[in-house]
Length: 552
Image (cartoon, rainbow, N blue to C red):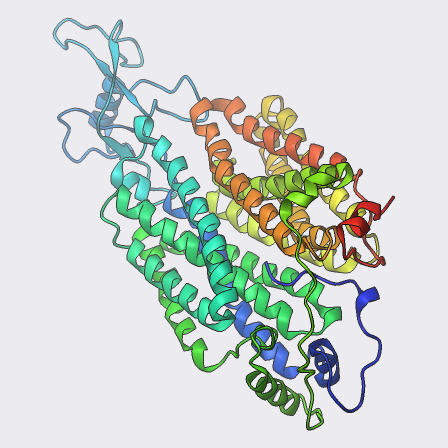
């Protein structure tokens, strides 16, 4: 991510009226979040809508419709019953589901028997027939007209490919964070986000014509890379163009656009219901992002770090003019100062206190990512309408981020994060009772509890960025955040495997197991957070020794 968030205790309270200034002092003078910054900030947040769609697209594209084996030799077979003759054929060849009572048919097997010597029971099922695995299927089109899964028969023995494809996407997110993070520091924020958005558009549009599974996972891997480059670079630009007291809110606001993208995808999926057309619809508007080259500036902070002071001053003067503020003739301090020496990341392990804190924070990053994306992907496995569940899964993030903004400086980072993880975790754990013992009467309550779990993980995701940056010293902060971000990507790669385990386990237990795993991981994360110090209204540690003594 971008520059670490700063607490208000470190923000300069005054600035000179004349002479040279540091960048933060200039930002205070022209308006920490003036009209110019607001316009740029909204522009860079808009791609977050597409990022939210791309990140959660698998819920629609890889949706698994109810299915059963095709009846051998029956032309124009469909999942829905056509007439009494068709019903008779279905009864003779398709066994009822025994693994999952919520399904009508067994999805992967059919009866094999000798028609001349076989007798049938009162339900027209053959007696003493053997079961064989089928090679072709028909799909229920009541929820999806067609998904990539139904088009390429990624069910039964090939179902593992669905989870693998989702994990490969998150692998792309991890690689993209590493590649575009370095690129952003090398060639600048503006060029990096332009390259990322171009790749996001190309990979998303190309996905609509993916001819096979291999092409699909390659394009999704590239989309994952582009997601990281777009979303993270936008976050960095947002942090670097606003004043110190506003930085902690920029990331949270960016997440709101992300959640809006999820809600949009639910609506598009409901109206279109065909993966090919959904992909075209969500990709087409991305071409507009290519016009950003003429609208968004380079980050003044990056330009200053590269010694390009004249370009930085031009941007700052343009912002001041737009915000109707006056700046002196000379504004930036161009004196070259020695930068604080950056310590090697292994120095964390030289202190027992820092080592334990690192493990706790790393675990929390992995869990918030695991639970957030796991519950999002699992929304399609909950009872009820898949589109409505997915829509509410996005909507519940809005109160999560609003709560974070309101209480971040009131309750403190530790208390708010701990409460979020515990509340979400307990809600998910509680679903074991509503699923196993409540039956259909409590299906709505199960969905509500899962949504509370998503609310908790969403709030936790927003808080952990700020909390982590404030816990670790300046000389290790960027390196530590990099490690934690990688840990989060590992959690997101595991999330699809847990969410899709419901398909493998089946029945009520299959619905309960993913939620219980997510809940237990969240509760443990919340408990471990209690062992960390609070950072609200404290001076951030600068050195390793400061960090070791911090909170003791």
